[in-house]
Length: 106
Image (cartoon, rainbow, N blue to C red):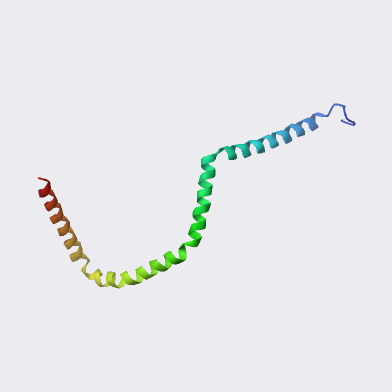
């Protein structure tokens, strides 16, 4: 229907033009809202920085955990048969500490 400049366009062309304009407007609004959302941008920046730091730290931390685990495991294995006695001793110590503390407050 539109054969030259200045002639009226067809309804389909107008609808397509309106739809294209709406899409552009929607994209622009989304971009503006993302730029205006400072807390979300800050969270994203913190998350990126934390990921960078995690990538650097795991080897020394993992090594320390493995060494600690190797040192503690034999102690835990030897103490396992005495769990009941250890629990009773801890409970008794806690009771004594509670009584002493209560008497000091009085």
